Image 1 (cartoon, rainbow, N blue to C red):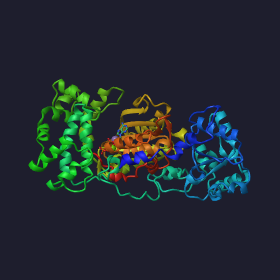
Image 2 (cartoon, rainbow, N blue to C red; image 1 turned 90 degrees about the vertical axis):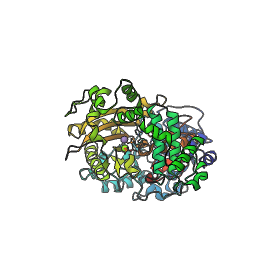
Image 3 (tube, helix red, strand yellow; image 1 turned 60 degrees about the horizontal axis):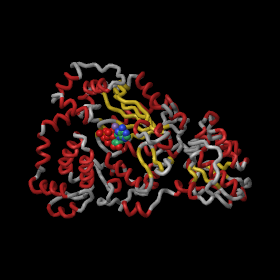
Image 4 (cartoon, protein in one colour; image 1 turned 45 degrees about the vertical axis):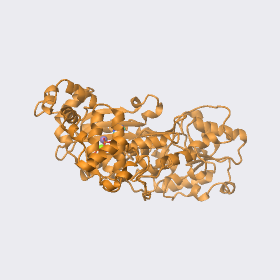
Length: 557
Ligand code: ATP
Ligand code: MG
Ligand code: MN
């Protein structure tokens, strides 16, 4: 199914338009990479000369603007037309003038080509109001805005670009103290979620199959997951991946597998001869001998145990095993964790992080009920909105996939103003630390070290993996804080919603249409151009696969 789609589809017209345009620029003018990366621009060609059109496309491209193919998709329309009557022939007048529309994305700023020329020349996106194509239209809007929001002078460039925005439904509403700051609608969950599409359980990629949390063949998948984990513990990634794919395939199978279904199951994606044989063993003996053997293996048991300590990965676990360590007691002695260990301020040492995690292991092993996830999220958002009013957030991870209990809390957040979103993670962590809510930061970073091939866009995700201490009972919890820029907010939400195999296949689906997807952005492969999805669904639309409800993304055992 996916491969058929892949061959019949190319990336979204929005991604292609700038380059496929017949007016594609011939000469290069000034360049200001990235300054308009968050803008969708429609170039209304009427009344512009060929030279002007060519220059404008060139400038838009040099500033990384998303040049779209119709005024409906744009938030900025560049036009040389200065008369309402003439403009009405080209764009829907209501879209251009209404300040009451409920979606920010429907607002248009109508500007003259000079806005683009001056923005590129000055290296920043200049206020649209100063370049209004129809000055009296702009005036009306300003008056209206002022009625609604007396504080509009202090607004960010971003908010003023989109005009006044309606109070919106929010997953994590700005707290009362900051109720005057309303984020733009495209950063909020849609008022009506996209309809569920019927998904095919035999689809080649698991990101197009329905994978619910509770499923009928759980015991078989749990058995195969022992082998997947054993391969991962030995850093045999290819083999671990094969098991992961087979598990994801069986997970989506809607009926309990019996001898009758055998033939059908063997035809599922990623079920090869080896897995088929194991399924037969499972059907006829009630267990898989290789799995039982592995479960008893001293090495497997010790490596599994060691990796339950946050910060100990397979490589460290194997080193510890090779040094003769077998039990948690051995680990505690090795890392000199006393009983009654009080976690100290952490520094950059990985060993110290392991000591801390080992000291807190029993607490951190406890799962977190949904209500508590929500309460911790609310507290953190209160602090975040004090640090920088107007932030939006989504609780991602297993919580978003519907898990009743989570192992940690994954919070993705951003600020509509890209400048305010910068370094927000570090500032939030500092505040939570001084409030005594974050006791340890196990890891704090941007994303650039993740893949050297990406350029500036790698700064677009900042993450802090922390230990949080609940104020009422002092219980320690793992909290991952991920800060994205507005243009990478939804890719971060999708990426951190998981599950792991779902992400992996989403990346493959993107690759098949010439795109690169991961939590830090959706880019076009040939030139690394970043696109700006305005909703979670838009990511799926651009890749060309149906949107999948998060509760059906439970692709892992
Ligand atoms: P639980 O937390 O209950 O064990 P989970 O699915 O939330 O389940 P996490 O380890 O919190 O598991 O990861 C959530 C998702 O975030 C993963 O599916 C993965 O796609 C993504 N993720 C986790 N760590 C990283 C990372 N360092 N970089 C990028 N993405 C990550
Ligand atoms: Mg999680
Ligand atoms: Mn996590």
